[in-house]
Image 1 (tube, rainbow, N blue to C red):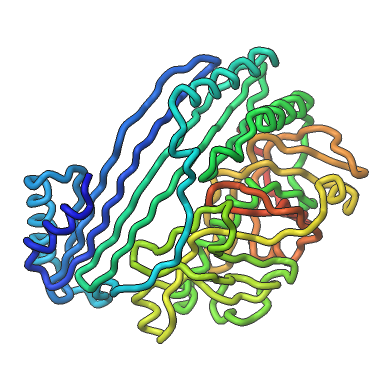
Image 2 (image 1 turned 90 degrees about the vertical axis):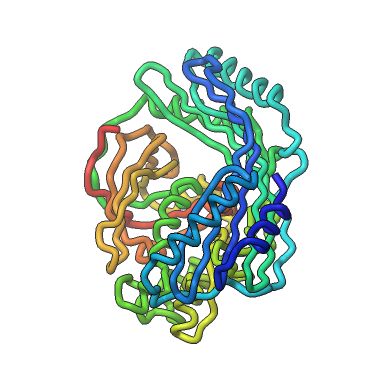
Length: 424
């Protein structure tokens, strides 16, 4: 794959008034395992080339997955034909201009060099641990090396590399089933013994599950659960939708709308996390506070909407929430009783204007009382408004990686609203 060849073809053959070219290349290895056996290894490159062209304010785009001249000719003709027949776009924006990009390090040499043999060894060790525990384990270990480019007729030139390592394990023993996963740009941070230990502890706790009725109760949200909840909240923090009155953040910029213990940043300064230097519109990533000590500072804003409001475009490219010093044990001692939540899933919007979400717990819910874990309980459905929940934060733990894009603390929140039991 030659990005210069693709770019030069577009430059030489396009007759459009404007164009934006995106190229994405991934070299991936994925080893799948199920019920204590390796089932599949998938490997190979993946190429995506997307071209958006415009004539005046009429735009069209097309995508191909090969870079030979015949395919590039098809790409260009298809995009230009669509543009010529497209209606005028009242929100048309010309392609991004040249911009100085931040220097980021999203590519880890050890992860890039990880061999399939090493991945298979990790899987086999996972299987051996499960067998010793009298259980079966399924999941996937994966590593990816990716490169992306963005070029425009107006002079934007972007190039980014990144690596990604992941290892997930779902353990089943008798009627108990639970999961852990790890995802980061660097393989070096992965500790199989630690992750399997957590998986085993979850399984042991779940074996003594007791029935628990839905209610408002204090919760300790571990980083995995917090990530899932806050990404959904973040999608609602859209400047245009808020300015048009469709979200709870309408008219709240610069105001203390969240709890004072809550802050959220996108940052280029934490080497543990992936930080993309630009987004698909060509908006350059900069240090940004979204929420600072409870005050709503910024909201993601597209180039078009920034032009409409004479503002600055910006995007959420990762999630860093500063923490505190409270351990999980200390958190359990701060309230009479509560639940520890490992993960959420199936989160959906209930009321976008209010910011209300619903979803379910998964991978183990632990009940604690008197500062100690007593037993596991059944899964529960919640209905909660996350920005209001941040006003009930009682304590924060030290931040840790929840994924390659998220560095988050455990969070103790009072009166979290559970509304129903779930059976899975």
